[in-house]
Image 1: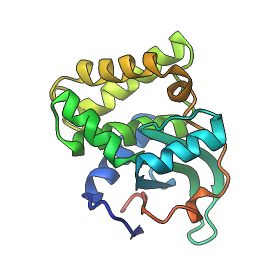
Image 2 (image 1 turned 180 degrees about the vertical axis):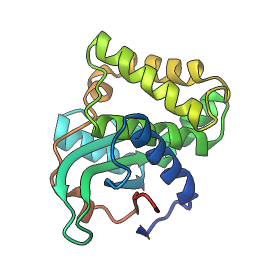
Image 3 (image 1 turned 135 degrees about the vertical axis):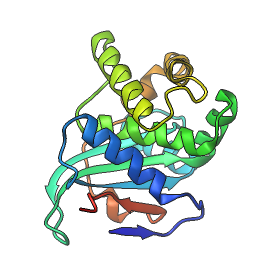
Image 4 (image 1 turned 120 degrees about the vertical axis):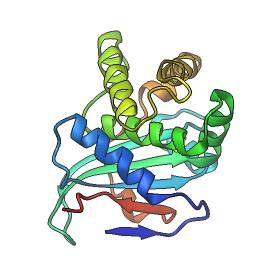
Length: 189
């Protein structure tokens, strides 16, 4: 089921493809459900401040959950929030389309929902490897260059390590609080 309410038109199919590619890569059930919320810097800045005490916006926040969705009975794994303005600026800096950047952020967010982290060097290496493999499956491995995409995230993370190393949180009902774009990803089969 896909429900949309947004000021940022975006191809939902690309969001679904990215989320499903990450779930499949991690051998996670494609029947899992999650929400992808496309919002703005102000909103992510507010959440970053409220949950981390970091007074700065970020590109993506993940709120893991492990619950059964009362509407569908499916396993709900959490919420991913993406700042479209920040994704646009990062896409411009990397020289690729906004759609590619948002797919990268969806993949990154799903990996966090599934327990990946990048606070420690060994965790980061595993997460970046998985992320690169998933981007390759999506046809983004050389667009413009998956190493360049991951290196841009690395540079950005080093500059703002606190906000970026901990942009995943315990789920606390955000799905009902954020009325931007909500895409529930579920295997169509």
